[in-house]
Image (tube, rainbow, N blue to C red; front, side, top):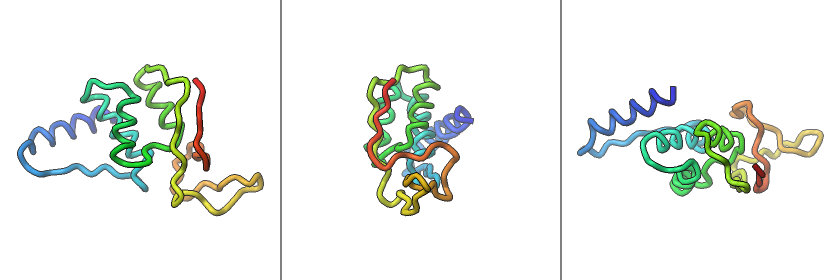
Length: 127
């Protein structure tokens, strides 16, 4: 699927080279799944590393991907060694649930994709 999306985007851009046309990629909030797909596109079209692609996306769409499982999947997919310390941005304030479970942790919201929820503070993952 990712190859099909990348090929489709490349074909569209080639046809619209001189026109002011844009491609909108957006999931529920435009961060995790959106970033995951855009980073895949960047990796397939530019000679850059996963870390560079993650930075490009997070600079363009702050705070970028904030769920560590998406970051881990990108490094694994491209067979790149994840840096020893990867600092995930904190979950945006608007995304934080005010409801707590019995352990005092934020409850996942309705748009959760089934993966682990991002912590409320910066997460640092050792390799």
